[in-house]
Length: 594
Image (cartoon, rainbow, N blue to C red; front, side, top):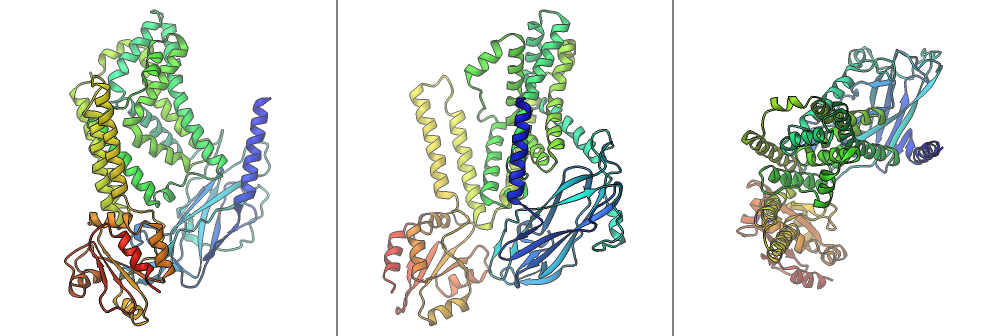
């Protein structure tokens, strides 16, 4: 009874969410996208397509090529169908060239009106007894829409359509034609239940099992694996049948942990109506920075500078308990202990599962749990195999440290994807964060006096927080509308008797980041710049041949950065601010502007 009630509630939530956000047309102030089907209905075992018709406001464009698009922000189309339908790669129209003034490069773009085709194939059959079925298709659209002066990342919402599958579909009058070139790009036909499945799905599930098996050789788990097995065997009172049951119960505890991950995947898809778009998240500089810093912390852990610990009360209860309940707790705890070393594997698996159907995503996550639990099930039934396992030793520590270097490489790769003005500050903070973690885990231990341990760890926290305040850049949505350096624009503003503020900065300048946060991060200064109609110019001097770099030396006779120059109406000489704490002085000067 309760199960039926819960199922009905979930269906109502899904239906309400679908009515609220689903549409076959999405509109923003700069783009309109509609989806159109090639046929009104399709037959099992046939080929068809969807057409996405884009209409952009004049002067706006999508980047077409990932090779030339800044930050990989080219147009990406991601269709997702709940079974029976398998999509090929999208077919984009021919792009045209566009000269980007800010970068001085010629780029490939899509603009005005254009169409992207999404070819798909239909499963050879539908479940027995079902004469007709409807498949819900969701289309995700990613990419920056840019003009000559700015770029945006519009939220295109949920672009959806329902594909009707029936053996009686005529399929004689297509709404549009794709051409013969799409036939070679169509994937194998998918299927569900008792029918055949795409080989790539089976391959993914096999990889999931292998990923689960790999969790057992992680330095967090391998040394304690024999201890856990022997403890289970000893509690079985030398009865093989009980030993096998205890082992299976321990495996159930591991699967329970992965069931929690699968449930999180279901909640994100059902209650938020869409998958967790990791592509969108990785275009968020804050998210990328946090992920990179997390990898730095995990690398420090792999180097042995600190350890993750489970609260002693929980560990003692799981370790000292007997019976099947204790075995479940030990299995769940073993899965938790594997996460510090296996974070990259679990994160990649979770991200992949988010892009699949609920059924397949849940199955893949649970298969990872099966892979991790498999050795325990075998070894508890045949404990004599423990004698053939390699002993944990120096090789394990070297392996753990090697994983740490791999994590650092991935962290650097993520940081390199950040906007130029954020990279150096995040790198500096990563060093400060690593130092703070080193203080926390190495300077004191559990034998250190409480007061000294408390002082050292509070000092580590204060160091990291202070470094974050001083080094990390301001949020991306800056209150000040900075314009790129252009000598002609500055000269025209001065001729019009308009105040001009020029901020000379550079990506490699640590003091510039402090100025950005301490001065231009203030709401009162940003408001004054807006109220007084001040032309705010960001003069980037990162590279020696930038126009701002040459002007800093040859026009303004300044030796280096940071420096801010303020031209006030009616004055001959500008005001110059060369220190990093000039917010009060700048505010007084701005207040005097008529």
